[in-house]
Image (tube, rainbow, N blue to C red; front, side, top):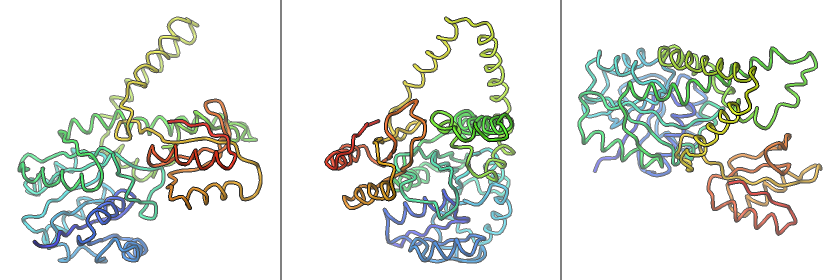
Length: 366
């Protein structure tokens, strides 16, 4: 059996995470990488992720079974034009964009509908670029596939198997359905988060008191505002109608809340918060759900040099991977001064046992 060859046009956070996940699960595959950034290409090669890197789109991609279009959406047309002369008839083209209708239209116009399956891994980070990519970013995340009109069942099945090999969960949707759904659960929240951050920036005092004490709930709901502005500019320009429609609905909803607030109707305000709480709590409690489950603990630590490093080292020596670690400045919603987030639920119990053995008071939060 011939070796599976996979090409990447662009290798940022998502493309890099896909490449790393595939390399981890299928070590013998060939991975060919083109990226405009030479340092990214060099890093992918030195990491052992890329089998081959190229400085332009050339015949190196002719042997590919799959090619992932991972450059910014605005570059897709140019990259497709450069790639088409070297495209094998049996190769499946895919992308990782957050908007699907536009790329499907472009593919159909090029007559490549029989070789394209849109892809959108529902995973990400406020950080971006290949340097921040990691195989586990895709673990148990939904990976949406949007077949073209000419996609054959066996092509879709093979791609679903590839997604499963990454550790993700394939979910097949129509391209237009996908764009409306992601506008609601991904694109609109980014606009809301960025709007809230800008509002606080404009409302803050010269001393920056709001910025200084902002923590807890504010940081939780605005974290995504730190994402790549280039990417979100392109998403807004390519999924405009869906986002604008939902934004109008949201503005109307906010106006209704404002009226309830000014009326000081205690019963109505209670129902507003309670209905939201009930629906939010009904979301799937798993990392694959629309709101990812967090496996974390908080604990009190001494305010002294090396305290945080000591805990991180202790857990690392016991082979416990830390997903995130940071100081909790606002205790409105949780106890403990240090919050540690893990990749897997089982690590909560192990880490708690180790740290309690060293005298730390643990506050588990699943």
